[in-house]
Image (tube, rainbow, N blue to C red; front, side):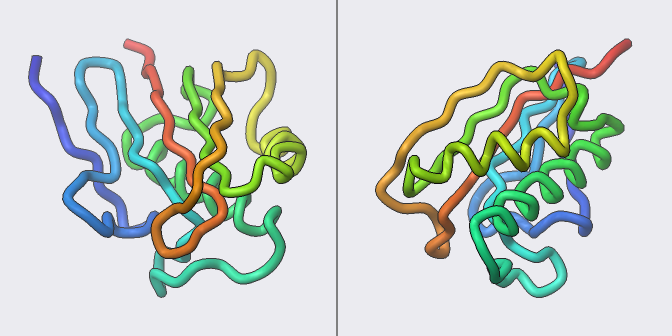
Length: 128
């Protein structure tokens, strides 16, 4: 099955040897997003909720570039450098997703690229 690479300037450029997303059939694998502002490639400033919103905005931009929406996400992985921010993820996520919610994991990690406090990746399945 052929794969296609998804790229948009509405989300941060890849900061390593990876693609923003890869589509294989009806499945789209969205690479991890940290709270980078696409235009400046700088981390968003503010509280953790602002960082979480920026991550969701970046994921949404990549989903749109793949002709999907966050409603098409079936699996979301959340990486936090402090699991005390888990409730903030739930609060902000409620503004981006409706039921039925995607499957999700939240994982505490020691560090993330560029000193970010949150990163998320996702798997999206598009209709025929």
